[in-house]
Length: 76
Image 1 (cartoon, one colour):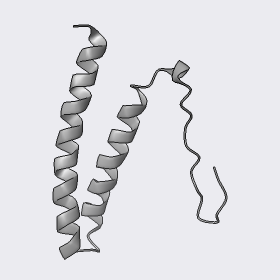
Image 2 (cartoon, one colour; image 1 turned 180 degrees about the horizontal axis):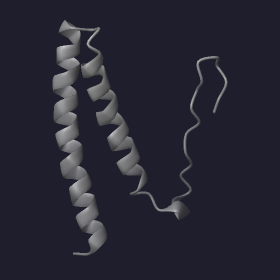
Image 3 (tube, helix red, strand yellow; image 1 turned 180 degrees about the vertical axis):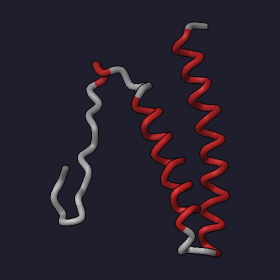
Image 4 (cartoon, one colour; image 1 turned 45 degrees about the vertical axis):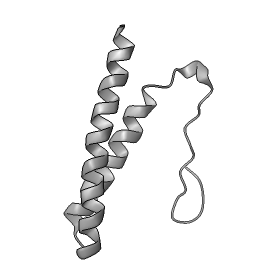
């Protein structure tokens, strides 16, 4: 097994942990929709998985960063 396989395995383990926490946070948010700490936890879990997954795609794969929509409807 090479180093990249180890990175993939670690990403999968961390993603499952993040998804478990995300599931609990989303259910709890239904009971307290204005809970800022819970919302922050949800954002961090999703953002962490997004950023981590970006390291797994080699640049030659042709993947480009998605453009982000700004509040005024423009794209960043």
